[in-house]
Amino acid sequence: METIQNPYLRLQVSCRGAEIQSLVDLSTNRELIWQGDPAYWHRHSPLLFPIVGGMWNGRTSFSNKEYRIPKHGFMNDRSFNLAEHTDDCLRYVYASTEEDRKLFPFDFTLEVIYTLHGKTLDVRYEVENCSYETMYFQIGGHPGFNLPEYRATDHVHGYASFEGNPQSLLRAGDQGCTEPDRIEMPELEENLLPLRDEMFAHDALIFDEAQINAVTLYDKKRAPFVKLRSEAPAFLLWRPYDSGASFLCIEPWYGLCDKQHFEGPFEQRPYVNKALPGKRWSGGFTIDYLR
Image (tube, rainbow, N blue to C red; front, side, top):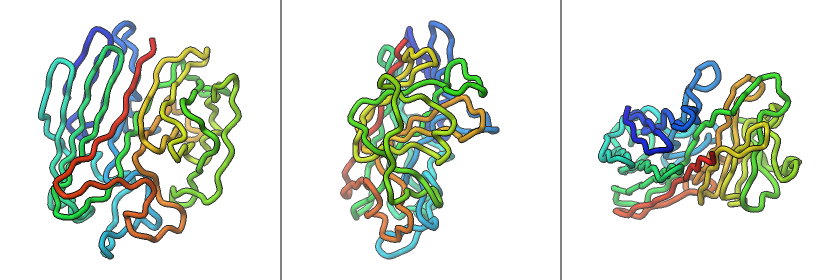
């Protein structure tokens, strides 16, 4: 476990999955990140690569050869090397292995870089294609944020607001893949979305088509406390339905799960990224603490 901090925030990250374990407001000692209670969800902030979401029937293909990649990819439990540790930065590096190529047929290097700037945490992904052919992939974040003063019996657990122009949503259905019909944007109260249990009866709220570029979370008194910003084309809001889980995940995805009944090649999955041989791709997200 590696730690960096400044006068405002303390960040802890594990080499296992290069996953955030803790982000603490030092003025109050308040933990912002879900602590992974396995009764609800055992993760904190997993890295999703080389796919996000699930695949129809668990299959995909590259160059007419079938592969089976686990939902959200296989990086969660891979061991990264700590390549840099400064006062305000942690940089983790992973190089693909022969075992990885059984699941995903490319050589790659993946870097995850965490940098603290005041009350802001910047998370950057750097993907290098070390193969001799174009590499197609998806990547995304999945941080879980603690909901302040959570009580399972409350009708509303907090609020969210959006930057951009959200109009409609996709919904996950069979096998966690998206349904063909879009649904209306949930009703807002004074431009805020109330976070209610029933909202997550169909898994996540899926904002695609780059409709939004930031989500701000508010407590039950409508005071903002954290914002996540990204250029990712898809954002998801998720928490386990009807479980008493006291967190909400804001997920910026450079990609999206399959549509139901999709059987095409990997490069036709939604929002697939590509890196030419020897080239790099970069993306990521930023967490702003607002108190």
